[in-house]
Amino acid sequence: MKTLKESISEAMGVFDEELFPFLSYILSDFWEMGSDPDTIIRIIKKHFPGKTDLKVADLGCGKGPVSVKIARELNYNCFGVDGVPEFIETAIEKAKEYNVSALCKFRVGDLREVLQTLPAQDIIILGAVGPVFGDYYTTLEQLITHLNEQGMIILDEAYTGVDPDPAFPQVLAREKLFGYFKSAGLKVIEEIIAREDEKNITAYDTEFEKLKSRCAELSNQYPEKAPLFSKYLENQAKEYKALKSSVIGVTLALVRK
View 1 (cartoon, rainbow, N blue to C red):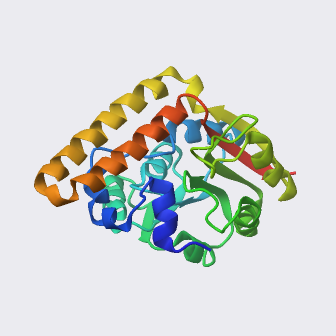
View 2: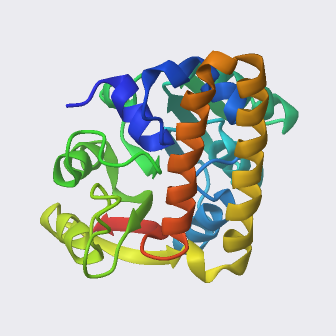
């Protein structure tokens, strides 16, 4: 199993641990990273109409936008965990800003360890962090253990069509990914593709420009590390290009069969 830093690296596109001290600054223009809160809220409203007092675990919560917005709009109790302390600091501040501190609790930690301490949840969100327990079958098996009988798992994920992209071998083909769901005893009840929303395509370019600007500032401040920031941008450019072509970003809702 990967270490916490290795898991964060894979999820955040960080290829070198030397980047870690700069990660918070590079991403300082972003509150929402990866998962789209509005899409997730739309799924929850559809499948839990009129439900109150639900428990939500937001694993790999980043800066907390999903939890904060769910708490504000649906009045659910949300618990978020992330391995980056600066992200959790922002999440706590945002909960205060949105007046949902009583509903949102955030913690710095390894989500794999924290999950073992959680009681059964109504909704478990795994937002763009991948199969953190090693592979998808094992990851889903772990999540199901902490899911109420009528609960739902929401994944922010990516897949390819028939064949994997050689540039991103870690991204599974859709059929293989869905095979893991079936093996784990889960069925997909929602599949929302990000690329089908034109605003997401436009956002990719805007997001990359923000990353580019922050990396330029850091390169000026730390010229000896300029190649490090340049390599990070190169990798990010490849990822955004793939999301427009071979790699499909998707939000999935899963329940027991």
